[in-house]
Image 1: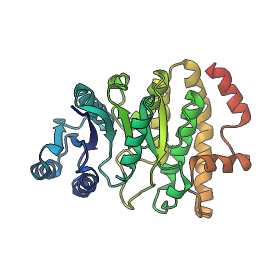
Image 2: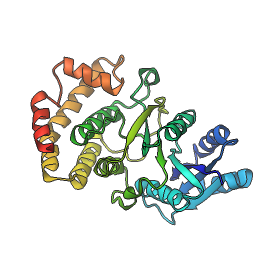
Image 3: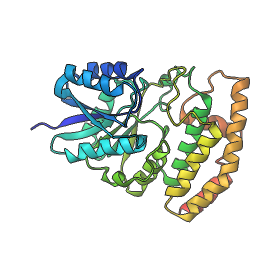
Length: 310
């Protein structure tokens, strides 16, 4: 039997955008060997009703699983991966796709093609900050989210040699059962990407990024991003300290935390003075800072980091 692909959607109280998300996804994959798993994380709005109606319309193309109550975004992602692995005779790949209309279904074909053609790859992660052509539609992107992403991604790369450009994208492709090491992740919330990437490096999983359009719907705050930026950054840095392999890595995060706070604060001031082309690719963002000699990851810091990482 030819193996299929499973697209898993983590969902919590998405009644406003869910139907549009499902329809756009269904139209992109209805003729392919692809099933859609809607994993409801204990929604209390009309999400369950919308899912039941879509299942009547689409039949076996749509699978519905749910938590009795909300267990968190990270836990829902883990359970999607577990579902795919428990059905490994049926599914060859799992793709995670958020329910907020901010993932472009056209990227699905790129993720699948990469998984099929590069058998050594375990994880395909889409990046909104890899290709300058896809960053042009950045007018609505909250600058604090962008700056936190740039800094956390840089820190992950520095500590774990991951070569990422976007560490917070939920649009990923996985080779079924090659990521079983992730099933025991402890972080079930919106800091779970930190633990995910640390585990990816620890277990030597092979990761590649593919570009995807940067889409942000004005007025649409993803959960986990409602808090002030300093609180969010603290949560992410605490995740580093919790899940890091070694004390030396925790010490480095502790040492760099005040500077990173100051760095982002200064960048926010620069943005408010000149917003033109501020949001850009990961590579150009750090190139720009290196040239301005305003780089938290100074040569001295990086030399210290190399010593710590040996």
